[in-house]
Image (cartoon, rainbow, N blue to C red; front, side, top):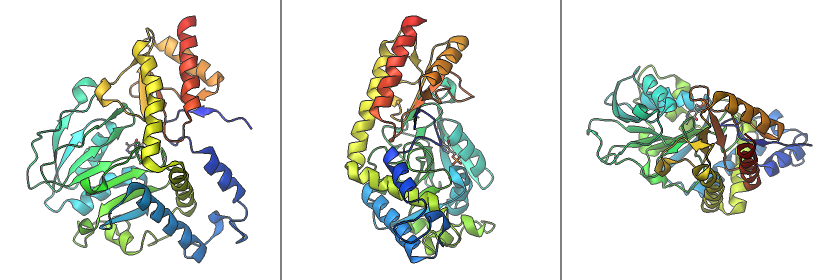
Length: 359
Ligand SMILES: Cc1ncc(COP(=O)(O)O)c(C=O)c1O
């Protein structure tokens, strides 16, 4: 077996321990004679799996009792529509534009109501998080929307916006479970799991109960109505059973290591190794304002396309894969999610040092 260090932005690296455990249970899940892939979502065995996953997530994130946890399909992108359909009572919301995913969410919401662009960092290609201490938020807004960690540009909110009492909705796809958060500060937290939590195909929505309503937009598809899903504990129809089972294993992996405080410490350590190197390198440059740097996605450039292509190719030959930057920004990007071992980041930095010396 030869495993590489996979710096993909998502789907991304998963803990080896989790993959091994899943492999061991593949043909016969704990004596029931079948794989989790093959069992009914209505079976007692599966009910235990999904309930345990939810309980572990609640425990990890310290989710208050007045929040529901939903395991849904459609990815984070489906939530771009589900959020306004369910939450836009006044048909007005504020969006902070910090990159492509926030932009896409705002564009989708515009189909259902008025979208006020509260702030944007488009003027500097999304290399920073705008000042959100005094935004033009009004009482008639149903919510304020942020993308908390910007996967493509490598920025992250270090403090949440001052929403002036309006509900906050956050897409946390690329920083999910990377550090502790105070769920009570959000109305809705959601994220696709394929970066930090599990295999693509699940989006987890954590939503305050008073926002789960019947009076959603009348054309809201049954499946996109949070109430449908909440009333049935995410089992209205067949959920992505196997993927939820893997998410559950990742939750246990995190709990075993000491939870989100511990993973935050490890993530800070890993990111520091890379950022410290970038800060002193003459060849490689980080692209993000230091104060807004993500712990998860680290974009950097050389500024010479040919040399960048050579770097990506040679890195791959050395077992460091998926370092090419997003197609819209170029350069390189190392995604160093929870499951990326420190040794992977150290090996990357060693390789960058060697590349710099040789080129
Ligand atoms: C922050 C963020 N939001 C949304 C998405 C879209 O996710 P999905 O492919 O699950 O729709 C991504 C995907 O990379 C992302 O990084």
